[in-house]
Amino acid sequence: MTAEEVVDVVRREGVEKATREVDVVTTGTFGAMCSSGAFLNFGHSEPPIKMQKVWLNDVPAYTGLAAVDAYIGATEIRENGDMDYGGANVIEELIAGSPVHLKATSYGTDCYPRRKIETYVSLKTLNQAYLYNPRNAYQNYSVATNSSDMTLYTYMGKLLPNYGNATFSCAGQLSPLLNDPQCRTIGIGTRIFLGGAEGYVAWEGTQFNTKAPTKSGVPTRSSRTLAVIGDLRDMSTDYVRALNFPRYGISLAVGIGVPIPILDEQMMKCASISDKDILAPVLDYSVQSRTRKPVKEVNYAELRSGTIELFGKKVKTSALSSYYKARQIAEKLKASIAKGDFLLTEPVKKLPEDRAFNPLEIVSKEEVK
Amino acid sequence: MAKRKYLLGFSPTRVREPITYRMVKEFDLMLNILRAEVSERGGRLLIEIEGKPSKITSGVKYLQDKGVDVKELNEYVSKDEERCTHCGMCVSICPADAFEMDRKTFKVEFNSKKCIACGLCLDACPPNAMKLRIW
Image (cartoon, rainbow over all chains, first blue to last red; front, side, top):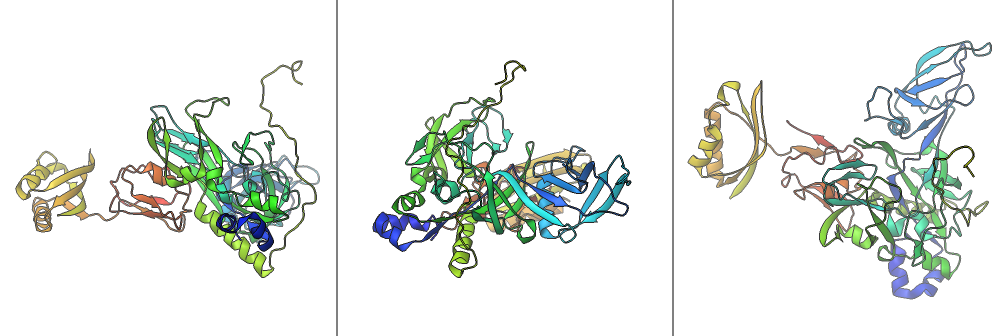
């Protein structure tokens, strides 16, 4: 059963009966996840090269690794100032099977004499191509609005002046980590739906935070995150999509679904949380500071309704994560579990139970802790 | 009463004549200017005309007789269904409510009849699904 369907079942039949009847609840999310990228291995040329700088379709990739390994980050953009094409587009083109132009330069060594190479690669020619995303599937996220009299171009989309709109980016009641808020069943090694393929939880995501305030058992701020891994070869552009936020940059929409085994009634209670019980803070993005205070807290049922009220004004809302796709992912995962194609795994290790999210302070060598 | 959108093209020699004004007066039409531009190549006007269907037809004929290039416009922008992820970013951007989030299917529907050709959606769509058709 999906995390959306189970809301009604629990409301109708109660937690106890639902726990007996439902084994697994499937979740889904599809949204911009900037902290994404792919590891690639190109194979060796004749004569071989120790790649020092690499460009894929003119987008730089990081290659401070072994000779022909590279990491293409989703938000990397072209060096010529073209902000409309980046690493996310390269990843999407690779998944689509399109040829990708590879250029690399080097200083040349005794064992790797070649200094320059230009050629084409594709998903078929690459030895390894796997998505490794250090921070995905944020457990809750803030809502963005804009009190200034100018349009703001942000990673939360286009924010119209004078509270002209508000944008949010979370699947709410379908969101993976909001359905298992303490990560009792989601841990290192958990098999997940990633970009249309099978993937795994690799580690705690960066900025993993267990200290956020909670209400109805779920954090009311951005908190836990997942680092995930999966093979690009099995993925689909339906669930991995390059996004362009003009005047901000490029990002990657990633589809993630996590199955949650209903171990006990407590687990069922968590998995049946509904949009109206999940709160998110509304932040004014015209305040350019990390310490900006929420102007209000709203719930996802309000956000999803199309308008929220801010300072007595009706403000139109937009989601940046697709609920339509999130639902599709939860449904797909449900179907493959029912067919026996997707097997649930027990985590190899639990995610941290106590982890703070530290800010970056500007200090001297003597002051640093 | 009917409502139709037209893109008018005026040659450089015609830009000084109040042709559109005369059409409005003579055929009793309501006119909403959505976009206007004068450049070296002449003038371009994107208008929405409201009036009796027969009067609109006569008005358009009048424009054509005056040498105005008239194109009826169904779509100023179009939504690429392959690119659209149905996130809904456009919904709060559009001042004319031309995008609607279906609360059952959670798909975004674009109603080009409501579009006022402002173009605000073009750089707001993260997967670049909105494409400019004219202008």
